[in-house]
Length: 344
Image (tube, rainbow, N blue to C red; front, top):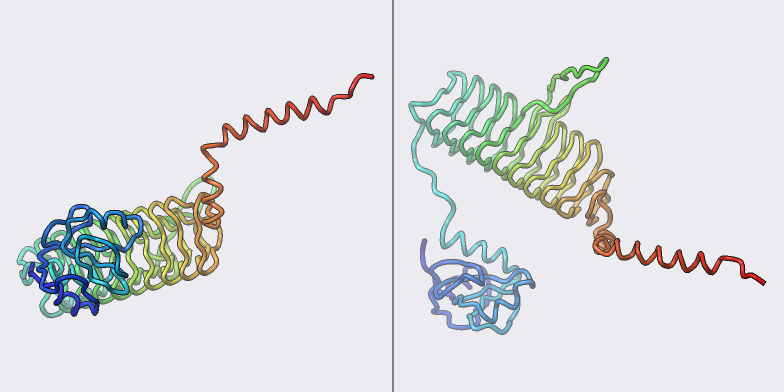
């Protein structure tokens, strides 16, 4: 980690410093936890009240605002803060190992320059590995698999045969790529496995969290688009197509043959049925259940998922339903009395 002055950071991110440009920044922290020498940021108005009490030396913001800290004003505080954290800390460093003697690399496999292959990695026949890849212990690469340059596979990642992984892909521990899909033909009460002859194609700059499972296609390929990011415990069914730059938060499950557009954001624990289309730039709230096609640009929530604003109004009434039911019964009783014929 290295220290930088506020003036240097402002120049680095193309921002404007309000306060002493010679303030030295040594680390980064949240508004609540920051102290002297720390830099923090404000990107969510929910935390705006913490600006008055933060002990950070500098806060990255989008406009001038009252605070005891000096300010670094930029157009996009969150991204600028990200750039500063990378500058101060850098990314995780990987030990230079070369290829360990405790690996199993097939003679027909091709390994690019400057790869770091740790103990107990298995690379099977006709696999092609690009340059500067890092494979941690226990990684398994199946036959005829292709992996691009600068990829990082953490411990116990498994990539089945024939899959294709692009450049600069990171796959975290215990994830499985290219397993058979959950496909069975039921005949006379018995379930018969369907061979899955498709593959998984992971495009460039994809991040896949820990303990994810991505099924190979039954006939066509399962595709994870360029720049998309998957959180931990995400399940992608056979033949699913995820468009570029989409975000899938932890525990999302998408059933087979569904298509997701580009720049979609899918919240945690969302379940999506198979054989539907989700348009571009769709936002799906956490724990939603999606059972129908979703138009481009929509924001949806709930189970079954509906327009997000409608869902907010509907779900806000749930806690009052017993009282509403009681009031309706009271009104019904009064109405029934009024409807009785008056005796002459």
